[in-house]
Structure formats: C-alpha cells, structure tokens
Image (tube, rainbow, N blue to C red; front, side, top):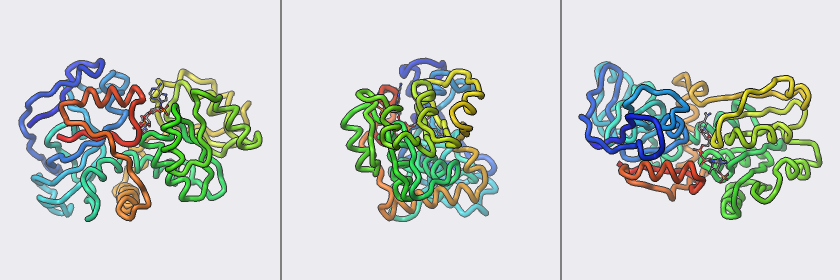
Length: 324
Ligand code: NDP
C-alpha cells in the first residue's frame, strides 16, 4: 500500500511517500480501507518533534473508510466488512489502509459521506467537549474563540451560537472574518488590525468574557487572560503559534481568581459511552445540516507535505483532507 512515512523530524519535506505491506489485523483490531484522512495540527507537532514518537512512523490521527477485515475477537463489537466507519487516535492513517482498535471505531450514519466523517470527527468532538464539558456554555454567556475561521474554530462557533452564547472570535484576515460571521460569531476581531484585548473590553463594557477558548497559545495566552471576567475560565487547548512559556500561577489570582485548564480530546472520549455520545452528536448534526462543514482543501496523499505547509502557514480555513 502507499503510505506517508517520517524517518526523521523536520520540515514538510520529511513526509515521504513509501510502499508498505498492508497490515494484518491482530486481536481486537480492524483493518480499514482509508477513503478520507482528516488532517490535524497534532501531526505537525509530531513531524517537528514537539511531540515525541518512535520513528519511523506513519502520521495520521483521523480517518474514515470501509471495514476490510476484522481481527480475532472483533465479532462481538458489531463491525463487519463493508461497514463505513470513522476513528480518531494514533492511527497512522496517512495511508491506503490503517489498523484501528475496534474500541475506537464509530459507524458512520447513512447519509454522511466518508469525507464528511473524516472532516467532522476530531475537530467536531473537540468543539463538543469544549462547549459542553470543559465549560458547559449557557445561553447568554460570552466566549472568545481564537482562530475563529480554523477547523475547530468554525465548529465551536456554530455549537456555541446554537447554545445561545454570544461568540467573539479573532482571525487574521477580512476573508476569514466573513467565514467566522457566517458560522455565527456576533463580533469578529481582525487581530492584524486591532488589539484583541482592547476590542474584547470594549465589546463587553469592560466586563470581560466568561470563557476563552485559546488554540493559538504562545502569541495569545497573556492577552487571553486579560479578556476574562473574574472567575472566568481560560481553556488553552492548542499551540498553533508555539508553546506557552512557563507561567507563574499567582497571575491567576491577580487577574481575578481565574481558572486555567489545558484539556485534550483523549480525556474527553476515554470511555466508549463518551466517545459514542460525542461522535453521535457530531455526525448526526452533520447529517441534519445543523453543523456545517467547510471542506474546500483536499489534497492527494502524495501532497501531504504541501497540505501541512499550507496548514501551518495559515493558508487554510475549515478542514483539510487527504485522499489516498
Ligand atoms: P486551524 O484550522 O485552527 O489552524 C490554525 C489557525 O491558527 C490558523 O489558520 C491561524 O488562523 C491561527 N494562528 C494564529 N497564529 C498562528 C501561527 N503563528 N501559526 C499558525 N497558525 C496560527 O487548526 P485546527 O482547527 O486543526 O487546530 C486548531 C488548534 O487546536 C491547534 O493548535 C490544535 O493543536 C488544537 N487542537 C487541540 C485539541 C485538543 O483536544 N486539545 C484537539 C484538536 C485540535 P488565523 O489566520 O485566523 O490567525
């Protein structure tokens, strides 16, 4: 099978196309023929060596496709060859085939395509836990979402707006501002032209927001804390601009007894029930049209390096997909 492999960490050029044997499913595993790969920032962190992996590795944390073969002991899990399925995790899914533990697989409902499932699962469940669990948003509350036109940003904005929260977002360009407004943001700050902290204060009459969802990290962290109301929550869930340097916790007291969390999806889908609930909500909202996906960036597997380069250089909006 064709697959992408990394033998050393580095720039996008270390993503090499190779031929590998089709893997054989072991106990509890399912072999899927990958039809669509959802791309995520985490694969860039692994490629650069920010997150450690044993090399060589095939990247890929999200995929949708068809069940090809079930390993021993999978019969009771309800999957059979031909089923359309999707998964997130350490999958090595930049490839034509991937092995997935049955416990991580989700059946894709009729009416949802593999591309939609690959576009929705990881970022959709991330938006889901942020809006419904990390800070269960309520109607009338105000949140600030950075990278409002990004993959997670557009989905989180839609969910927060559906709950009835007021959504303020930041984006780098006017074009992205338009997309963010379409997703339901009531106020969009183009941070390349305006100071986002001053704008948030103006928009909230100096009160501050209830929660900040910050995936940008290094360049936004300090400002984000200054946007919060007393006892508000800073949910730092990514570092697209780099890692936040060591931080003195006393600042949380000085800025209003703030809460700070650094959540990750895996802890919010760690039981089968939670995984099924979040994936079910997200995929059913896609099916019903309540959750709109933007999937205009599709690349062949051979262009995985270009796709990651576009992603990390802010040239994309919404979801980026690889087609094996
Ligand atoms: P995005 O589509 O949001 O892409 C990143 C965006 O961040 C860019 O488009 C850009 O938007 C903005 N950005 C701001 N500064 C920079 C910078 N210096 N370099 C690059 N981008 C910058 O990606 P995803 O939706 O896939 O992921 C968003 C973040 O969420 C990532 O940090 C990812 O690691 C994290 N994440 C965390 C999860 C978790 O559970 N903790 C799960 C999933 C994702 P603009 O041009 O508007 O500035």
